[in-house]
Image 1: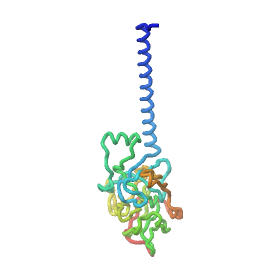
Image 2 (image 1 turned 30 degrees about the horizontal axis):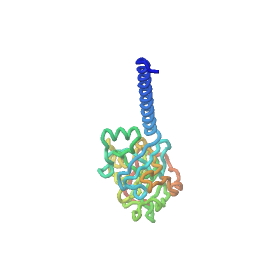
Image 3 (image 1 turned 60 degrees about the horizontal axis):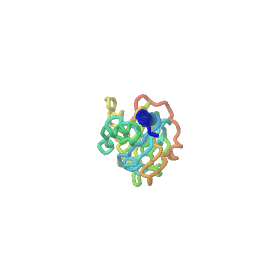
Image 4 (image 1 turned 60 degrees about the vertical axis):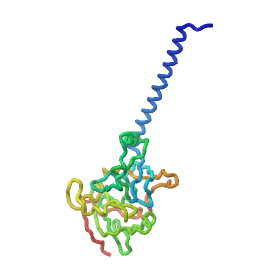
Length: 256
């Protein structure tokens, strides 16, 4: 039986209609996936590239780390945060991607290049007294010495400079694990904040600038590791008094 021209046209029309419906469904799936990925990145977690040597050997340059944003941060966590003002040099700034790369960062398809962010270990919470160092050369937090061998870069001292600080309300005190290569809270103890203020204001990271805590090294595969809180931080007592509005800073060692 020979098909009529009308029947042939109807079949072609139905075929085109089926392709159009499939294309629309595919676009909806892709858009939906991008929306979900963007929401997860904004509120749950994202991936960052380590740009500097300041956290060696816990984290190496080029490592990809997963940062979760749900759990409150605490002492001992490895945290990613926005530059609180004047901390970043070229070596720690991270390479800024172009507009296309930035789009894929925003939707979660590429790890964040870390441009404008830093990663350090959280040493002192609001109200904590952090000091360097006791008679054995150890950091003190609320009078309790930290045993840092498990994560401190081999050969590094806990700190080459002496200080005593009380962390102010709403801020934290952070240090890199590679202390001799880390521009952390210690080196800003005489700096004013980005909006002026008193000397030392720039040394403390506002809690609202913390993106989240790093929980996993996922790439390269050979460096895969879970990032937890070192055991020594579990022995630190609570701060003896409420956090002050302004930090207390002395560039001297504590009584030994």
